[in-house]
Length: 220
Image (cartoon, rainbow, N blue to C red; front, top):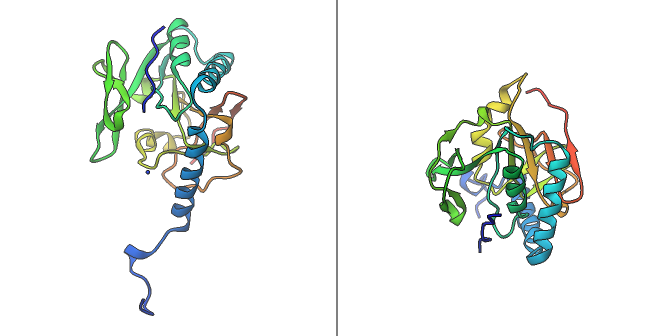
């Protein structure tokens, strides 16, 4: 099946706001550096094998039922490989949409149906070149990349907030049907606890090459 090629962060007066550091923000930056180093260490055949294990775990959760609309992403070289998951989703008859950055200035993204070619977009990431724009509310499952996660379903990404911004509607719903938000990661990306920010959208599940975690929906 088709497999994307991997892709190659003095005075005694009170300090001014520009110089004040936010401890939570600094902790996120530190975690990001550490966790990105962990996932970059997994390469080559080991990365492909773990990607295949991940795909089998997702399939065992019955998330790839025929006809389902799923949002997926084409992984970069430092992320767990999603090519086996993409191939399996298409084989199972899922209708796949991929994210495309639509505004770098405002950190906005949208999902587009995978209907043809993909090309390098923002940050050199593979994106759909065409296809119909697919609202997130029309997707049954959205698989999301992450840099780190904890056992409570909290996620830390690359820091630009594309997914949190695009999926902000989920934070305000008491009742919802879709999409199910599923984070994908290596097991080594788990940490005991993550600092939580008000804009963070919590995950419904996390899948690694070793295990899957499901979380009870928390109301806002």
